[in-house]
Amino acid sequence: MADDQHFMMQALTLAAKGRGFVAPNPMVGAVIVADGKVIGEGYHHRFGEPHAEIEALNSVLPHDQEKIIGATMYVTLEPCSHHGKTPPCADRLIAEQIGKVVIATLDPNPLVAGRGAAKLRDAGIEVETGMLEQEAVALNKAFFSFHRKGRPFITLKWAQSADGFISALHRQPVHLTNETSDKLVHQLRAEHQSILIGAATAISDDPLLTVRHVYGNDPLRLVLGDDRMLPPELRMLNDGGNTVMLHMEGRTFRSFLLEKMQGLHVISLLVEGGTNTLEMFLQEGLWDDIWRFSVAQTLEGGTPAPRISLVPDEKRSVDGDVLEIYHRQ
Image 1 (cartoon, rainbow, N blue to C red):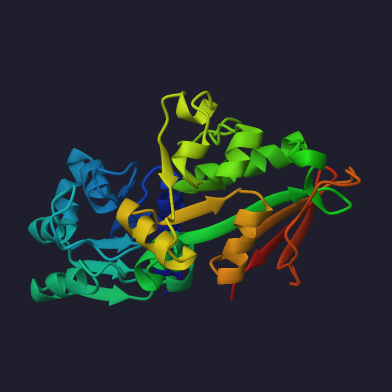
Image 2: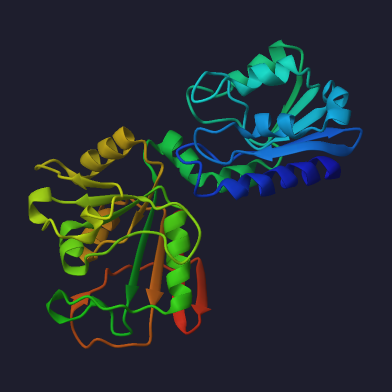
């Protein structure tokens, strides 16, 4: 059991290397073990590229090829059984005559949802599930949210002054957080597939909403409001990136948003909008995490920050800024 957990933890560590690059696919890692030794390993690098199981099989050196027959594969998510961007991984495992597959968690995607494991068992391969399952689900919380809740994993983020404002008088934008906090925010952006603000924030701040202080993909930019409100000179409309306008047209916020997110196949959403936009999400209960930065600077007036009466799950100092993180139970 200890060895099994060790190899699965190795697969989870590999899977995390795909963070920010595989969405809307999940992060997956795989390790192949024969005679107690690792002979192959791999992870899903980017959306559209080979899955972890195939990467692991392809990594086996020529002198170890014969050891694949009867070997054990540890994989963090159930192997797929359907044709998507790539052929079914279950078919390749069967063809390679893997002896046993240890799966951390079954895939919540209805296209898989136990079919991959069943296909392996039907081919005579021993299958074990549930090894470090909680860790595997936590790693892919956005993927599981999308398929179990029918909506993306939603993180609300804002920074506020010591006296509780997010912008100065007359909606004048002001940069509150320090460089270390900025890097955390950009890492958060890199880990989310999309980022959303309201049209008023787009006009007043003219933000790029890109990943700049860390390595990662830029999120899909979503602007809530009528595109006729936006002046054509905004940077986000002219830098070659992807920006999508979301115009509710009188529809209810919840139904409109969820329909749009499903249509865009967005599995994770970071909301960096102004108070009005953030409060819409709070009032609808559409959030999973909240990241609130508080700084020592005072503004003595301006736009009040959203008010929440919650106890933070995490609280830490970030070079003088205070970061509070709230997790929805």
